Length: 391
Ligand code: MG
Image (cartoon, rainbow, N blue to C red; front, side):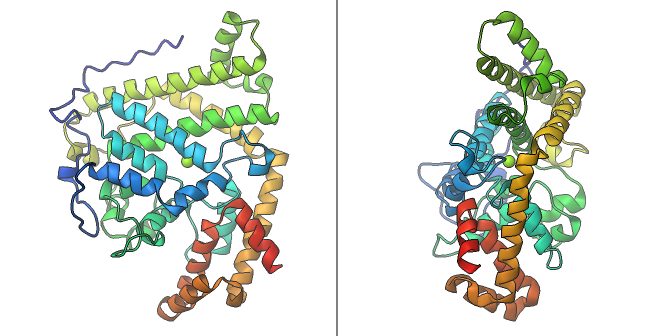
């Protein structure tokens, strides 16, 4: 089994059950629009529930992670990816006595702004938008929860808590941060987000690296023999192979992935606790003013993760068969954008009215943004249907 042990001595819960450096709603700047408290749920539970009930969340079911829907029913989609991230993030959060509700909300929302067709879709839309401010899925996730969901009578968006929004906005260019008010400040001041946000970011990496190995093997695009070039995989696979020599390869691979995930999670918890102690973190203010992020793998595992990542880039994400999808994504997304931009009559009424109204106020950038919002919201198959409709 994995040798890593988790030391929990420095993660003492306070009376609330949370560590002293956890996010609490009492210390939060709260929501953009004030609302009466809920009788039965914490503010972050409420955020999580708003995310689960959003339209953008349901769309994740039909958005590609790496393998497109029709290639098989068992591959990860953006939805199952988000659920796996939430599971891993919650486990880490609980072990560190952090705010598990906040962690779960960030994890479930982190990919809401992703386009159809995986990263290829995002790259294509960014290319289309390069003269109008660009397109970035992190910013788009925040746009979804801040403006694009239309569910409440008094405001656009989901009116989420500050820390949930902060966690969703993982990266942001300084020029964009300047227009984003309080949520953009940390990119300008070089301060850190909450530990809950930091850990969810890494839980995302743990989830996709492991499930992409699993999906990659299932698809046959990568093999166990190839993966044995990767130290992290090889070490666990060798142990599994020695101990369970008679098991079919498929099960050996599953057990290997399980052990890798476990080691990554345990290492992250253990190393983060050391960082908390070393940096004398006693409050959320200490977390924010720290020069570096506190949630981090040990140096050794960080290196091994990087090796696994570059293996997946070279052998899976750049695989000829995956690239075929990228070519299609580029064709569909670029065509949709160019067609809607040059002939707004092709847009459905609701989006055309919005695009023309916004053009009056903000010119071409705003006009293009409404089109990008419409395209970014499409599932893989809806994008394909729209492409068929206008061509
Ligand atoms: Mg993700």
